[in-house]
Image (cartoon, rainbow over all chains, first blue to last red):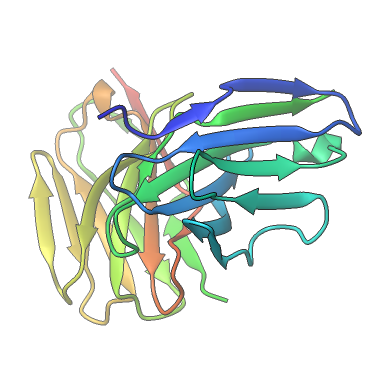
Length: 113
Length: 110
């Protein structure tokens, strides 16, 4: 079992470009969560998805950010027209149900220049 | 909304010392989880507590869930350099996602 796979590990984008972050959950896990972490900070919830459904997106900015978890393929976190303030580590986690512990991926470190 | 607070934010100990870190929630929790993140790494699940007053041990780590299910503690005995990292507590209440505290960063003097 390969665990939660995130790619890319590092992503550099210029201001105004789009960033696409991918996450493949663990086999058998249908719950996917995205968190954002700034240096020396905690994990800030962004969005919770199940296959083809967004369950809770209360932590995601209304503009420029979107997430999906299609029937086939990985979950995608998309950030349009990136700004310097979007620079952070973005972690994806999965679980078999909401009351289980999460398995985190290695994260994508996004740098906006 | 639900908030989870951890104290202290930073802890520096001498190798071999014991210490305790605390986690407090603004709301009653259905469960609380603890994670460890090594420098440059990702959070790794340590344990989940569900029952009021529950105590669980993992080698030198002891986790406790408060009677009111609003707080938790992590006690580490005989700290080692391998314990270095940031420890997060995370609570699950009525909402469907875990809310994380800001973490307790542990450094150890060998």
